[in-house]
Length: 90
Image (cartoon, rainbow, N blue to C red; front, side, top):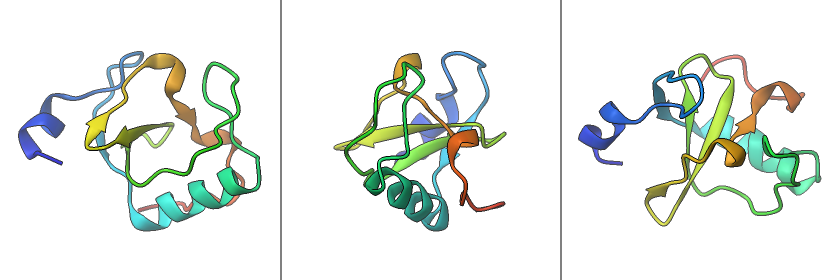
């Protein structure tokens, strides 16, 4: 992702800065998605795995990146507190 774009992006709700999702974080999230255990903020089941994503620096919300475009819609965020095996750090 373009560093300049990353520098200006933030969570649309909390205004917290975001960073790229680490490999361990991405793998843990996709494993939970594959098991049908992940809902987005709107309460809809997340069915498609993520190829890449952004996570708030406080590690509370993940936003998917689709075809290089960050999907920063509040209702599309994925809360990390629902993930049992989410890594403690990237």
